[in-house]
Length: 194
Image (cartoon, helix red, strand yellow):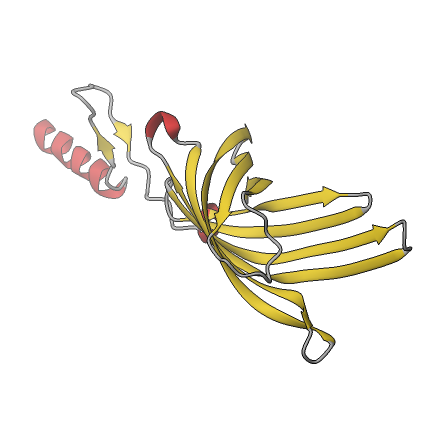
């Protein structure tokens, strides 16, 4: 009778306390609890970053190129964002001032190297920008859209948790006379995880 009561008591405990998700690891005698799989969170894979540039004086240049990046894994990232560049030239001799803006968008892909070189990356970018254009046949200022493929590489320096300073060098592969990039294109910026 005592054996039946003990067996019944043990069955009662196992049935009504639920299953235990304990597992033994490498022959340990102390069970560990299994953690449920973490649900997918889109924002864990997203970071915000981009590049900026400033120059003041006879030539004034302001450039803003933010990026919204999606991290497929630790080695492959794709991003997209707008481009805005402001130019101003002041000629002190002839008291001439020229101002212009370039705007558009870009798509960027980063491939990070494995292992000890995980902060080094290869990079491809495609920019579509709207630039000022002087039509000499019609004697008018107008604008045109230009596509610019760029290839290069760079380095990211960690400065915090999921926060990096980036430095990259790119080469514009287009021979178009209408774009404003001079090879090599040097970019400095940040990447901040959301």
